[in-house]
Length: 325
Ligand code: BDP
Image (cartoon, rainbow, N blue to C red; front, side, top):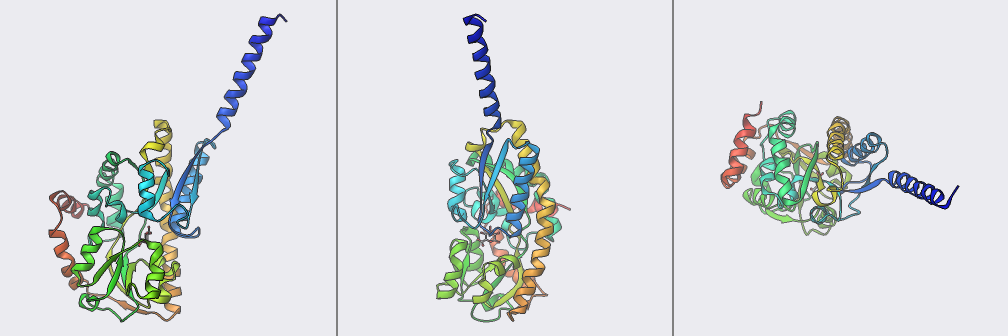
């Protein structure tokens, strides 16, 4: 073999080795989750990550970081916006401070049922809302089941809106939620999820509001024993991606990612339904006072003024949501 041929062969070999190593190195993306590893949304995130890995044949790996390891929701959303975190699963409540049109989805007594909410999320309105995330640097990836939220406190049983008067109630970091609780005559205290337990314990707050699984998994039920099933909101859970960091994915891969999130929904919903039951059983077994609200009309009436305060774009969206059959 002459020198020229040997050099050419060496070059081909180097290129081949580089191509193989480049192919083998997966794209690793991080997903931030506030809940613990065994919680339905976290297991849903994991199913999403597994589907992405499987369908991309290991080219795209999503690592799920549960338990607020990467920060509380508002701080995480900021990091997603700047491309420092690739994905997060959050409640749309804090997200609405970044993209206000999302407020439409968290108004009290908006949905007739869980089914109605899912029709909205998976239909044209959900798609429009995903599109509305992009100018703020986010990509809408998927939705998860949030359950219905209920008030709880450490002071007294609450069976009508007036019973909340004067109580200091923690809300998510959301102006709309502050407005909702103030409208009920309570003192609204916005704070990150991770601070609520000590807030209840030290008396900085008297109560908060959340669904059965969160009330139970955080042990809030141990320090705030009065739970009122008023079911005021269903605040959808969302997976968002970072527009900056996901720009490294091809359009085809981004589609693969979105489809995987969509396909993880039935699994998360199934786990959710199961966890709602086990959480409820655990709280009841602990002897908490559970107040069932059969007539929601006074609650709806008390929260109605919140609707009138909304800007026209939100009121229009609310109208369209009510028309979704
Ligand atoms: C839970 C949501 C979680 C929120 C939390 C809260 O799943 O994303 O952080 O409520 O109240 O239900 O902040």
